Length: 137
Image (cartoon, rainbow, N blue to C red; front, side):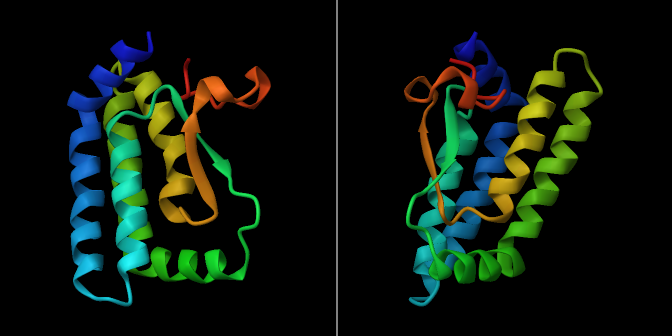
């Protein structure tokens, strides 16, 4: 099931969303100051390509630096990427087959707004009660 959903996701929204994250990553890596934003953007591009079977969990020890980077991220790229997830979710929800993909898109909006202080892990490593809906094992 996870593989089927990832394939559907890739062709019906995941590829263009991942390209958006990759473009943001390239732009951020041009300037030395924003390289941490570029690294996070590439990490999110990878996650956006194949989200089913993986989950986002809070990182222990994330402090004020994560908050500051998240604020800069929201201003420079986060709201654009979140808007991309929202518009893709609306388009996917118009079909019955796309509803699970739309739900996963909506669940990606919080991490697209604030990726710092979070870690992407294999969903099988999490207890069953802590797995998000889009992290189908």
